[in-house]
Image (cartoon, rainbow, N blue to C red):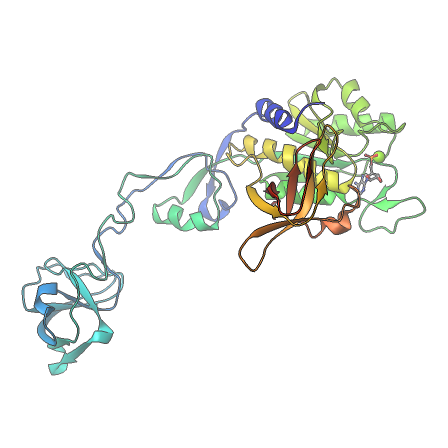
Length: 401
Ligand code: AMP
Ligand code: MG
C-alpha cells in the first residue's frame, strides 16, 4: 500500500502535458492558460473621471460657493484636449479623460449651472485628486497579469478582453473515456430487474471530468465477462488519453478489471492506496493511454476521482490546480479514523453564525451511500490510526461543484 500523497505524486509524474491550441475568447472560460497574459495598455489609459460632474482646480474651489467659467465638455470617448486655466471648469462624464490643468472632479450633485450653462457654481470644495483615477493606477502597459497554468474563469474574462486577447492559447482538453463494469448494472433509462441496479458511476465520473476540463465519452456498460471486458478496454484505449473504469478491482471472483489491464500489457504504477474509501484504486498505462481503475462504490468513485484522476486531467492541460482546494474547518462531531489508512470522509462544509467553518461528516453509511453523499461539499481528512473529537480543527478538501 502506498500513501495518498505518494499516489498523487506518481499520477503527476506519469501524466504528460498535452499540446496547446488557440480558442476564441468566448470559448476560453474554464480552460487553462498556455500563455502569460500581459497588459498591452496602461489602465486607465489616461487620467479618468470617476464621477459625472466638473473638472476643476482644487485651489479654485477652496472657498465655496465658487464660480467658474465652463470652457468645454469631456465625455467618454470624446475628451476635451486643451489646457484648463485657473477660474475655469470643464463639464465631465464618468469614464472621460480629465483635461490637463484640472486636478479634481466635483460630482454634479454638489454643483449648480448658471447663466444657461456658461458658468458653474461649485457648492463644496474638493481635495486634489478627488474622483480621478490616474493613468496606469490599475496596471502599467507591459505588466504580467495572469500566468500560464492558471484556469480562466468568469472573473478573468474581462481582463483578457481588455488587453485584446480575442484568441487565447490554452491547454488541449484531455479525451476521457468512462467505462462502468459490473453485470448488475443497467443504464439510467432502464428499470433494474432482479439483482440489478442502475449505473451511477459513469454519469458522476462524466460530470466531474467535464468540470475538470475533459471531453468525455461514456462507453457502453461492461459486464463481468473476462474476455469481453478485455476487448472493450482494448478498443477504448485506442481513442482516448485517459480511460476511467469503475468496479471490478477488489478481491471478488468476478473482479476482472485488473486482470484485463494486465493481459493487455498495462504498466501498473499502483494498485493499493492507504485510503478510505478507495483502497483498491489502480493507476497505470496501456500504450499512451493512462488508465484509472476506480473501485465500484459510488462514494469511493467520487473520492478517488477527485484525488487522482482530477490531478491527471489538470496536469494534462498544463494547469497548476491539480489538487482540490484545501480549507481548515472545525469538526462538528467525533470521527474515528481507520487502521493504516488515511480517511477522506464526505462532509457538509458550512459556516455557523459566528463565521466559523464547520465540517459535518455525513453519517457514514459505507462508501455505497451516495444518497447521503448527495449533500456533501467537502472531504474531511483524518490521518491513519487517529480519531478526532468534535471541536478539533481538521484539514478538508472542497469538492468541485
Ligand atoms: P465492485 O467494486 O465491482 O465490487 O463494486 C462494488 C459495489 O459498487 C457493488 O455494490 C456494486 O454493485 C457497486 N457498483 C459498481 N459499479 C457501479 C456503478 N457503475 N454504479 C453504481 N454502483 C456500482
Ligand atoms: Mg463489480
